[in-house]
Length: 350
Image (cartoon, rainbow, N blue to C red; front, side):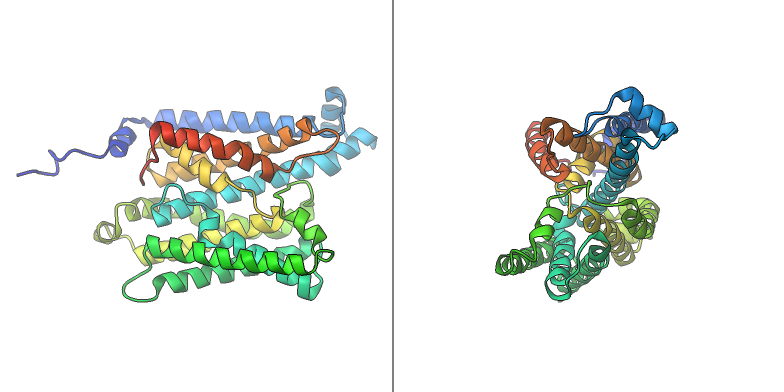
């Protein structure tokens, strides 16, 4: 007879037990250091060349010069947007992967990004909305409605919503909403010219006041995400085992989806959606943290802004005097990297 003590344990479980807390904390310190370095690069370099000494002199003592204007009206705001949007997309991806128990899921798989984009399309086409301030509320409303529709479709029928039905409902809804958005844009290209640029995943067109208007929602989403870490660990074991451990599966999933809506909806309204962050970062950090969702969320919160800011800096430098949007580069760089990593070590289960 095989007992619990003698039963072979999964590889991820054994790896997690082998990871001392000090090593995980050291990883957080290392990521914080890397984030500080990338932040410094984001402030130091741009499409408009400015000597480094002038940049840092104006960071601490703005003198009203052209260099000060470039630093405080262009580079600082986009760096702030990169940190907020990267953090939101990354943590939203970590939550979706935990909720659906799919290590390759991302915010788009539940239709959140498509719902936000479709709502903004309606706002631009029917109500003449323009600018990020106008996009914000339509994006957030679209994300909320899309998430509710996906959850309603996924939970219809017998039993509670399963990860598989949620994913299928999200993919189907995203396809329909994207098709409608494309159709509307093709019908009136002049009206949607500015919207096309918004949808490229840029962090350069959003102002600090726009970010501050969305920031409270993102903060609430982050608080929910960090509070759910322990419950998500139980859900990862399966619905029955989670219930036996005292975790409320339905309440955890509803709270998680609400957090995803706040995070992904808010970040999409700011940037138009940055591909791959929510998919790749949580998946990669899991190889270093093990399956503990508390550590995955913490690592992802630091690693995601690093990737967004690094892509933005590269986009500024390689296309001078123009720029390549951060969302374009994250897709170009991230997709081959993820394929190579998955082929090398296989996708880790949750």
